[in-house]
Length: 297
Ligand SMILES: [Zn+2]
Image (tube, rainbow, N blue to C red; front, side, top):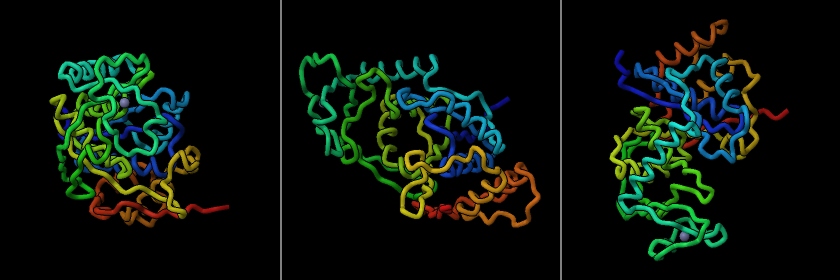
């Protein structure tokens, strides 16, 4: 069987169960994939093992299943041996191209800085046992046509400077892992929240250096609560573990201005099918945030 030409993914970190904000993210990536007759893949982004909560991955998968969202292929874990070997091989390629260097700067030394000043870049014989590995970057400007946000231009030098690809504790960093995963899974469009749009240039740079194929990007607006914070685990947003799938999906569709059907009594799968058939992503084009007033008891 040939692979569908559109391949999208939802990639949560196992730091807790899904809340409305992350469900909206899952749904947008799902509708976008299915409306394009594509595959929707689930990847558990557990690269930062220190933040993972035991059992959260299974809880996420269970909740998604309750909402009728199933990965079209085997769920990928970043901590798996296979993925770790892929990151190691990408890392070695960068090292061979002399694009990496050791950085022993402390958190304190770098506090208050938005971009890395390149302190360790030209240090000879860095012998500090505790060091991270940074990637040498340049002044190059990266342009991309974002599906939701339109034309974008980013410059790594202004956004982060040389960035870490391996941490002091030996774990690979998110930026490296995510581009290698997207390439290996054949992702054609990266659908994710606008809050991480500024990492795109770093990822495009990595893709270029590793000679991987470049996916398209689609950064959707984030859901914010009445005090202006993004709905997230950090803000203790209520999980949707016990919420009714139909009503919650309906609410998500309304937030996304999709005008979901008023008549109730339909099943969750019928609602998902309706949403795929009537998917109008242009309703949220150019929007950076969607307000959601959380009911306070
Ligand atoms: Zn340094």
